[in-house]
Amino acid sequence: MPQAVRAPAVEVRNLVKRYGTRTAVDGAGFTAARGAVTAVLGPNGAGKTTTVECCEGLRRPDGGIVRVLGLDPARDGATLRPRVGVMLQDGGLPGAARTGDLLRLVAAMHRRPHPPPALLELLGLTGQARTTVRRLSGGQRQRLALALAVVGRPEVAFLDEPTAGLDPQARHLVWDVVRRLRTAGVGIVLTTHLLDEAERLADHVVLLAAGRVVAAGSPADLTAGAGDTLRFDAQPHLDLNRLRAALPTGVSVTEPWAGHYLVAGGDGAAIDAATMATVTGWCAEHGVMPRGLVLGRRTLEDVFLDLAGGPLGEVGAR
Image (tube, rainbow, N blue to C red; front, side, top):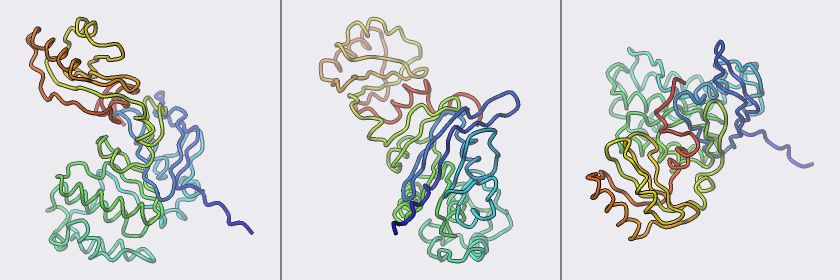
């Protein structure tokens, strides 16, 4: 007898969620595989938080289908809870509890938890085991929230901005935990405003804008065929017409957001020495001091800016 096909970690089809007259999610859909990291990205107001909350069972959809491990999170919450880990950005942790005691308490609620001491060590919290939550720094509370989300060995983990406010060393600790979870077969749904983080961790990326999925694929797929970029900051709203006319065919210049300029080679076009000289010569002619002049390859951030029309932090709420 052939083995039954296991349901994906998360499946969302034609999801609709409204708040009064406002439609926050308008037909979004994606699939998150087991043993993979799926990054859900979008500017504020794109609908990513609402989408993930529907997957977590915290909100009921107004339309469409949401399945986690093949089950309906709104109807089958009691069955799913032991199998799902949720890390919220504002975890609502009890301030008077000690870090180690809280983690041991949550571990005791699960049948086969990770050993709390090992998890504290992995996340750099051993020295804070006897510290109350209210005395932890913001980054330490963030790491504790992650520990609480994964201590029960979940099959699916929802991680909302897991490295927000962390220093580089702590960020790498969290990335290591995420990679270990993926290797263990956990399906991870990650929301982040850090596109370099998504490029480092994600196997699959879902880009949301105005409640709809505007692109999906691996980071490599989404940036495939893209050319070089030259980016710099200067005073906003410069007149770029003369620079556009001077650039070689296939090379464009835009101002994706105020004061940030992007010179991009389309369809693999290179930013060569002559193009660099054209840009810097135009800057000198117009009295523009280009700050942070960087030459590199097109990134996931560039793709996002093309599709969403602004950086992740812009637009409205949720």
